[in-house]
Image 1 (cartoon, rainbow, N blue to C red):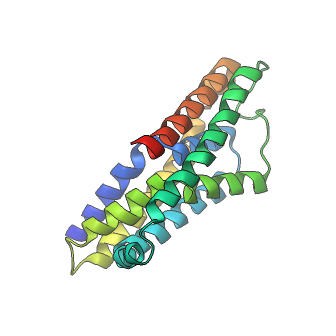
Image 2: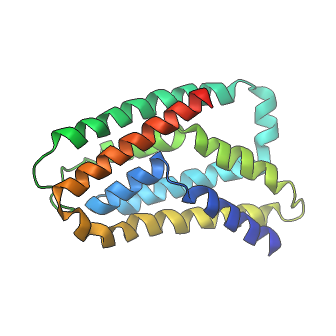
Length: 199
């Protein structure tokens, strides 16, 4: 149980930090658009990366030593573009936007954006693939339990975020709240992009 609880606590703590992926799930949860499928994509993606980290990071790093830099540059480019779109929406939209009447996103667009925010985000690899993979070595006899705890934390967090966001819906009945959210998302995207390249 030590490995399981450690994996759960560490994974939950890492995911809890506001990031591009979380901001997107929060926004879609507020709009009540495709919450289940998007939460499932995020959780399954995390599960795959956690499994790779716990059971195979060292091997991958030896084969592709440049993988970290490639992931950072690709992720920064994507996040800068996504942030620019959020800033555009923050300053363009002046009409009333409610959780039920906000501009609709197609399922294909939402899924592709979710996949990009997940798989082009180097922080996801650093948290799940590198950090969790390295710490799991402290539990040589409980690596499976550690991985299971980390995966469960991911499922709990994303589904709580996606479905819990709707309780904030009354706040976002005002157009200003949506514009502020878009602006904050844009700032988050750009700050993460800058940190990937310069930190």
